[in-house]
Length: 113
Image (cartoon, rainbow, N blue to C red; front, side, top):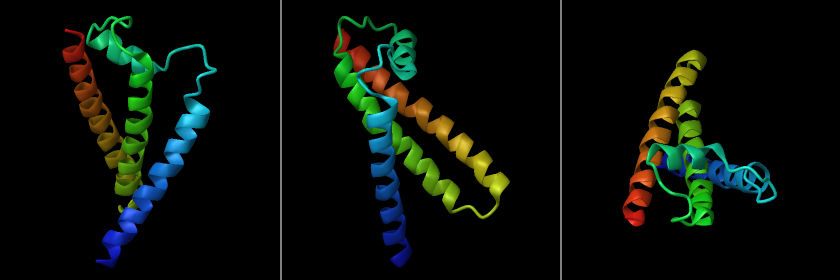
């Protein structure tokens, strides 16, 4: 039971730290360019950017991306082998990015119609 509490503490600590860094440093509004993730979702699902709220999409990605990083961090942290941890972490991160972005894109595509 103690390890479950430790895992939850590590998850929330890494999520909050990553969220703060991602929101304040990486995805600032002063940046004139759109983030690559938004371009990926809009082009993959052929969504017109004028029909959706880009600020809502930006904040959705601000919440989702730290979740992906935190889950990957937890998995890699609990693997003893460094090489195996890197390989599994890379695979998990790719799977999470693809699946969560797919869900976000389909929801946005449904809202546009």
